[in-house]
Length: 264
Length: 326
Image: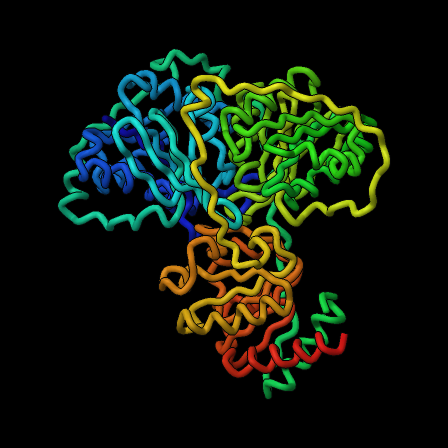
């Protein structure tokens, strides 16, 4: 059995967003492998170490920096990478991204080759949480998103999905999409030898024409949505700050809760 | 026409579904259009009257034992069939885990643009523009739709629930359902509830959150007591979760949940940028921290510099007195 992880290069969680006019200023952003994708790759590699999976493929779409995200995944222990890079892809929305990723996946043999499809629940930049479900729909297979546990047994899996106020225990037949969240595992810090080894692992590169996708089906032209404008959220102002005896500051807090927040 | 996908659990409409139904009616009025709802589940026919009360002109209902729990493929197929019949301009759903899993499937299946986590929208002639945060709330994006229907998932706690019953006679359309062979390959074996009787974090009006300053798992009992006095949910910073003091499901921030309550109380939380990303859209923020330079004070409407172990017990006693009085 083989596993594939779909990963994304995203701005570091420390990033402070700046704008140039009404567009994002990307000049000083440092990029990392999306933290949620780390959980996905770690899970696939653990399944390989447990002898359940014999190959872990990593697929990423994005500009040249996506290579670094793929290398990070290879350092965790994935075997090889696929990088879809094409200037035409700039401005693609979630639906176009899902379609392109599916074409690259099919080029690698698709569901005939890979039965476990792992994603991070969300990419912390676009935050649409949508590509895993969209790809499952395009491939006509089940998906369990937001999982905290994944057990594979032959061609079946038990996956626990965290929902508001509880957990759903899903039983599914493979192939299936799984989207990982925090709690599924604790991703390892790759050792220096693993990082060195990752540099030698193969990465296949595709352009959209390699995948048979016309340029007007991707990017801004092919997308179903378009970002019209970026703005910064309203800056919160520091309000009242008090210090003193507990009884006295609590009295002031009560006054705030009653008169301003209006909750008591 | 505005189509609202309602969601029920354990026989009751979920709060984000009520928000979506309320906003669906308001949006339909702005568009001069009809509002139609769809509800899927087992025993959901009992909810028809309540759904109708939100002013729905028509309600589609798929009621089957197979649909008791969320089933991505089956739910997506049913909603897609309704979309094909009704050709709505907009499809709305509340931003639950289910909403955020289901709507992308339907959007790509029927070929409409998708905007999740919406905190607002604009109607510009014939166009809908969705307003939503991205990069964990660090930026606000306006999203235009080039393909309709526009699929919008609404952030919980942002759009108000209409408490007045709108009296209309809703037409009810029953959808007959049989699972396909591939749909039978995915089932929910069990659903375990883990709420401790408190409101869900993402849906709560008030959130009481604790961080590293709590020093120990046992000290969260104090925050739970405070939360219960306020009818609040309990949240935690990443530090408190990583230390094993609180479950993952309590984490607020960039690698946890995003919350927009009316009141967020950050207790013993310094306010790292990743934490602020998950709670800075709260209406009011109260912070208690012993470090006067903690970044949480930069976003707090009311801050107390001091020892939380001295302040919180006094606050609890004071709120108890308040309760006894009312």
